[in-house]
Length: 274
Image (cartoon, rainbow, N blue to C red):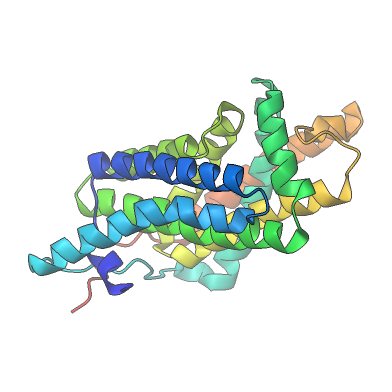
């Protein structure tokens, strides 16, 4: 069954259709939750993502029947840094980026309805359910869909890399379905898309996505007295905050330069299965 995903190489239009199917799945999951509030959020998340993934499987099956070539979703090229070096530097870049874009979360106040959703997901839910949905399922399925299928498909169809990365990041932001997350999700999506383009490693982006979500999950459980929409500036004194901010910006720039120089973006058409 997984084989069909290798044949799925959607363009921009099909990618946006998948976003619509995410919304449909979200509605179905919401109805299920209202009917039975005890349903785990990990199950409703799975239901939400099954709609676009089933569509991807169908597209891949049709392409296979037409005799089209398959294209591997994960074909790592880590360059001179190796896997550990890329993951260490990219992880550092991601953490630094989260500090740099921290002020953007205050641009759009979080509505009480969104706060309630976040509190239910990160604080009120069972620990196992939060870990499964946020730290395991979300990185696996969202990276498979947004980078492994959408971005890879747009690159395979000849779209300029920067355009494909921007579009996949925008789609990733829209999929989060709330404006408060849109800006950071878009920026993180740019980094994840760029890492995938440079390395063609889906597991690298899954690791980064898991790292980001795990940090949020741990912080939400440790600092229970802080509001769910609190930023770094709500935790640190002003002087300390600006020292951390400037240091993070410099560290982000350095890690991105090293990654750019030491990795070689492979031809996306190269890792084709026989």
